[in-house]
Length: 266
Ligand code: IPE
Ligand code: IPE
Ligand code: MG
Image (cartoon, rainbow, N blue to C red):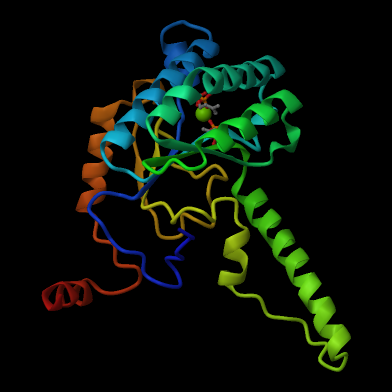
C-alpha cells in the first residue's frame, strides 16, 4: 500500500500499531556500564534486533522500521564505523534465510552509495529474495537522514516533473508558469513510500530527540521514549510501549468531543 498522509487524510486508528519505528540507542552506554568496549554493545544490539523482529511478527505488526546508522554516524571513530558495517553484513548473511522462512520482507533505505559494492550487492539480493513476503516488512535505515530523504524526494519529483514540464512547454509555449507542487506530488518519492506513516515511534537509551530520523513521516506519530538501553529492549519492553500507545487519543487536529460523537455514530 502507498503512504497515507496524516496531514492530508486521516489514517485508520487501530489499537495495535500497524507501523512501529525505532531509534535503537544506548548500545555504547550499555557496554560502558559493564566495563566492556562499545563494540560489545553493538553485538548485543544485534540480538535485540532479532528478538524485536520476532516479537513484532508474533504481535501482528505490519511494518517495523529500525534506525541502524544515521547520516551523522560517519563522524564516529573509523574503527567503530567499520565494525558497524561488518556487523551489518554478518547479521544480514546470518538472518536473511530465517526471515524469508518467516515470511518477512526486508527493505534497506538510505543513501547506499557510500557503502562498498559487496554490501550493496548483499542488500539488493536480500531485498529481492524477500520481496514477495507479506507477514511483516522490516526496514533498516542505513546511512539514512530525514533531511536527505526529503531532499532526494524533491530532486526525484523535479526530475519526473521536468520531463512533463518540458513536454508541456513544447506543446504550448505560452503557458510557462511554474507548477505548484503538493504534498501528494512529493510523497511517492520518499524512501518509504511503500509504507504507511509510523503509528508509534520508540527511542531507547533515554535521549528525547529525533536525531534526523523520519522527519516527514513522523508528523503525527505517537512518540515514546524509554531509559532502557537498546540491548535490554525485549518483548516485555515492547509490550509496555504498545500499552502506552493504546492509552493515547489520536486526534489528528480534531477535538476530543468530535472523536467521541464519531465513535457513537459508528
Ligand atoms: C546506537 O547506540 C547504535 C548506533 C548509533 C549505531 P549508540 O552507539 O549511539 O550508543 P550510545 O548512545 O553511545 O550509548
Ligand atoms: C541515532 O543515534 C542514530 C541511530 C540509532 C542509528 P545516535 O546515538 O547517533 O544519536 P545522537 O547523535 O546521540 O542524537
Ligand atoms: Mg547514541
